[in-house]
Length: 134
Image (tube, rainbow, N blue to C red; front, side, top):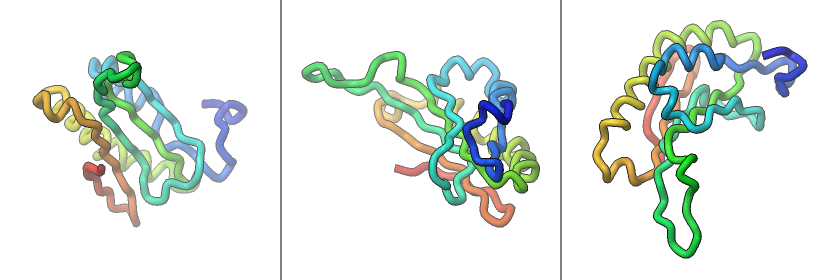
């Protein structure tokens, strides 16, 4: 993404690109309804987030639009000086884990699919961790 269109301060950068995620997910990319490159406040140690947006029952006109049901992926910005190292770790470990998480979610039972889920990857001192969160 060009610097003019990036909407990030010069000292921040996204560690992944749309191409990285497309290459990782392959045909599962069609299940991703929202790919966001976040620009807001510092996310702390979170570098990548994924969420399953479940269909909500329609009661009295409330609910979620069917086009929004699916996976949302959030790429969090990191310090520009750490971008290359973070990108290498994410491509080697987090993206295959993201692929596995999405594969499991697609095969999950109806109970799982009717509930929202979030999964975060955190990078602290070069150590990548991930887990489901509420």
